[in-house]
Structures are given as C-alpha cells and as structure tokens.
Image (cartoon, rainbow, N blue to C red; front, side):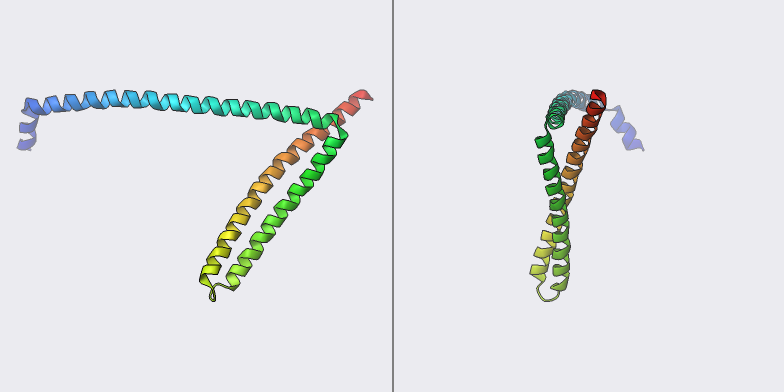
Length: 153
C-alpha cells in the first residue's frame, strides 16, 4: 500500500497519466469522426439503393399491370423459379443421401458430396427468397389489375 502512495506522490506519474489521457481523448475523437463519416456514407448509400429499388419495383408493377403478355411472361418466370427451388432442394437431398451412403467407403467423396449438398440447399434457399419476392410483385400486379377493372365497370 505504501508503494502505491509513493507512486501517486511522484509528479512523473501524474504527468504520464495526464499525457496518456490527452492522447486517448484526441485519438477517440478522431476515430469517432471517422466512424461517423463511414456510417453516414453507408447509411446514405443504402437509403439511395432502397429508393432506386422501390422506383424500379413500381415501374415494373406499372408495366406488368398494363400489358397482358408481360404479365403472362412474369407468371411463366414465376413458375420457372418455383421449379428451380424444388430442383435445388431435391438435389440437396439426393446429394446428402448419396454422401451418407458412401461415408465409410469414400470419406473424401463423402465430404465433397455433403459440401455440394450444402451449396445446393443454400442455392435453393436463395431461389425461394427470389420466388417469394417475385410472387409478391405478381400478386400486387393482379390486385392493381382487379382494382382497375372494377373502377372501369
């Protein structure tokens, strides 16, 4: 305890603490400004990207609701997306079953097939999300077309 009191009574300790505090304060202010500027830029870019996506979505809804052939093509594309999702998940299941079946005989091939199954399942999940987004868009187009047809009658 006496050593601590002796250290606190020395001016070099006080100067080093004050100097370290000033350095930490200056550094933290500059780091804070840097982080705030990067986060501000990131936030603005995300907001701008979302705004552009919304504008493109509204344009697409308008185009699909005004054209029967474009809506028909969008429905065919939606069906294709659904089949792609199913294919990816079936492929993942087949690869997993195959990998389990050859686990003891070919461990390296087992690892490769399990990794391929994981990639296929991931691709299926991404396809499912894309299908959901497209399905939502087509549903909005159908609702808009039904409202327009009711208003014209």
